[in-house]
Length: 85
Image (cartoon, rainbow, N blue to C red; front, side, top):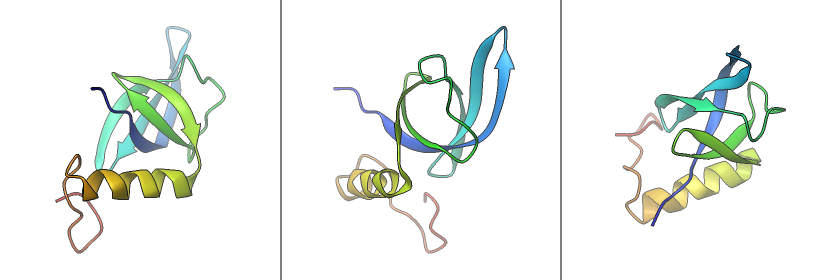
């Protein structure tokens, strides 16, 4: 089974004509290709898998999905500061 993880875009640029973003996933930042969703902007939330943005989500959906993933042990629990432990 493969899981898409919610994250928030913190930086966006073009690379070789392709839209690329740096996305924060519970405290860890990754480079994500936005080719499937080129209209996403800094501050938007998305679900990504294998380095590609798959769908845009709102902040509430991203937060509730992250909480469920933590509850089921897919993601590490948050420490007292709210970041991944």
